[in-house]
Image (cartoon, rainbow, N blue to C red):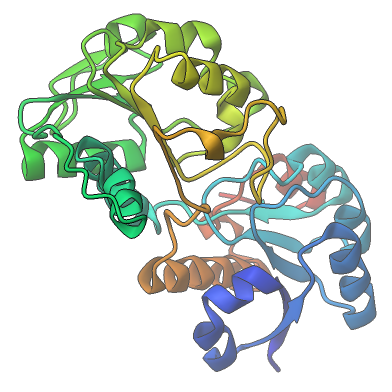
Amino acid sequence: MPIPVLVTDAEYRRAEDLFREVEDFDCAVAPSDEAGLAAAIRAAGVRHVIVGHQKYEGPLYDALPRGGVIARFGVGHDGVDKNKATERGLICTNAPGVLDQSVAEFTVLMLGAASRHLAAMDADLRAGRWQPRTGVELAGRTLAILGLGRIGRAVARIASRGFDMRVVGLVRREMAPPPDVDVVTTDYETAVRDADFVSLHVPSSPETHHYMSAARFAAMPRHAWFINTARGAVVDEAALYDALAEGRIAGAALDVFDREPYVPVDPERDLRKLPNVLLTPHVGSATPQANRAMGSRALQNIRLAVEGRYAEMDVLNPDVLERLGVSGR
């Protein structure tokens, strides 16, 4: 008998063909807001849900039965309270690795658009202004990658092999440079000192909240562009606005924001009003290939839980397995 699963509406639309055709699951659409999702769980009596990047703080964990799965449709999981889930006996999972190429490609596309002023020239031409702008070639330019996880390394590969860029990686612990990275350092100021572009690839957590602060923007060269396809909460958007408005950095290309859909953290600091900012609505992983892979991985995690194969799951809160009296080995 098919396993009933609720999928939040935005995520269902992103991989609808998969959710409709999979034979061992009965996937149904549910609201993304927490109150609506919790009500749908209780009404349907399901044990497992697939959710997006929204923040879930309480009702979701009360609605699901012990041993249920909260599967993230994606990699970042800062919207899921792992401690609360563990207390309730709920297994949290994500889908590592499945969107690396998609986000890395998008990051480099934003970098290229910034280097040649594509958004500004498109806006000029649509407004009837013929205003050519001079850009820069990427070959030989320095890209600082803050965080050399899977996506950071994929960005390094494309930038180094595709555009012959010099890549500097910021890491937490001393290590030898991985392939396609020229230099690694544990010191932020050293990483960005000579950068033409600074690309952020660190996860969102209490420790990294507003990691990109006024002081860190001040350490960037004035000619450098800042790119964020990671998480909005890692950036102090008020500090970023000030750095951009005052010309202390050249520009920013942003796909993620502290509040989504985007709302300025300060009405007087609206990033949409600045000419040196390229903005997109959190679409770094929005490709059919990545969407299907994220949906498949989420379903696979639920399938493994049903079969008791916990060691093969992408478990984010492993302590819950002991609480449930099952083995994750």
